[in-house]
Length: 315
Image 1 (cartoon, one colour):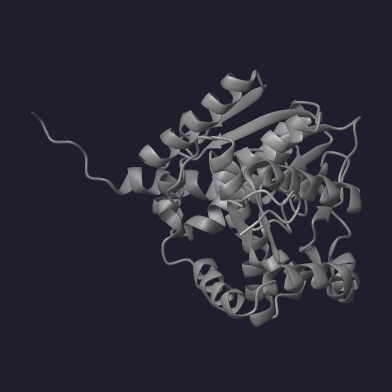
Image 2 (cartoon, helix red, strand yellow):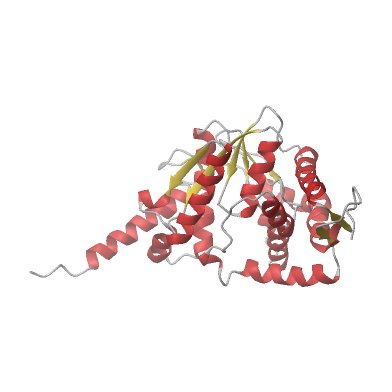
């Protein structure tokens, strides 16, 4: 098997692209693919200051590596979720990556506020992924504002986007379909643009890039992801991809190009109104934003538990 680009012996085969590459040519292909997505979708330019949300996994660290190599102004932001050893290892990978490259990294630990994901799930009985999503959106927005960034870049890859799209179509989640785009424009002056430069780049490709660049990342899945529907959707799409290479990229690319427009009007109708959260001062559609509502629920239920607990007996 020879490299499609230079005819040297190939090390990796990409069936979806009907191509094979040696190591240097694959790295060139990967970086160019991300750069083209950025340019085609007008995600940001050389004047932008980009907040890269890094989890410690391969996708976000590979993205940060590419954007740095492309010469963009970046600052990493890691939200430590308080999920035991998993969160500790994730934080260590982010700090090690940033230190080895001399990059700016800001870390916020939820445990310092008594808001670790396990604590929230225990107090509210909400699904972990739902609570986590609410918390991440809040802290990403707040960090971008505090750190003077005008764009938030996340490491959502093609497999993530295809699985999410399949789930939204199966359940006809029209509001979510309207927001499934590689670029989300801000709807308030305190929000910034959110972008997904890896939306057409597969998980296999990011794993290969991370391996070739010797990026040390957390391999394990988040413990809370076990049993999530997203994993089932990924498995279905993997089977389709194995028999028809290019299914995932065609599914996502064509939806973004043609399908998403059908859902834009309903989304606009829901986007009006909004004020300021009485808790954190960020934009909100009620007296409290989703994050502060969640936090109030946690505080309330923990207080009730404390009141219901029997008093400690004499020693």
